Length: 179
Image (tube, rainbow, N blue to C red; front, side, top):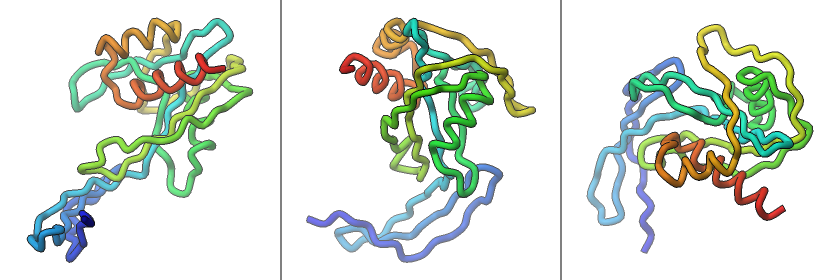
C-alpha cells in the first residue's frame, strides 16, 4: 500500500530566526485529512574529531530548551547555500580551534522526522592540529577531550543524550574499529 500523504494547503504559522513553522493540511492514505505541523530547519553538521591518542574533542554548553549543560560533539547549523563539508570545517575551527588533515563523511541523519526537516551531516576528522578557537560572539562553551572508548561507553550507558553526539560517536567508533 502507498502510505504517501498528499499536501492540500499550507499555512505559514511562524517565521523565526533559525526555523519556520508551517501547518499543512494533508490527505491521508485512507482519504481522511489531517494537519502536519512542520518545523523547517536549514540543517546542520557535527564532527567527531579524534586525535592520534584516540581522544575526541567535545564541547560543553548550556542548552536552554532543557535547562542544562550538555557534552556534545562540535556542531553547527548550515548557512544559506553552504555545503555541509565547508560548514563542518568552519564549525570545528570556530568551536575548538582544530584543523583536520583527514575527513570521512559518515552520512546524515534526520533529527526528528515526525516534525522537522532538519538533517545533520556527520563527519569524522583525524590528523588534527591545534589552532585558535573563535566561537561566535554569543556562543559560550568549554572544550574538553575524552577517549573515544570512554565516550562510547557513556553513550551506551545513556549518559550522553544529545542525538547527534550519540550517532556521531557510535559511527566514528565503528568506522575506526574497522580500519
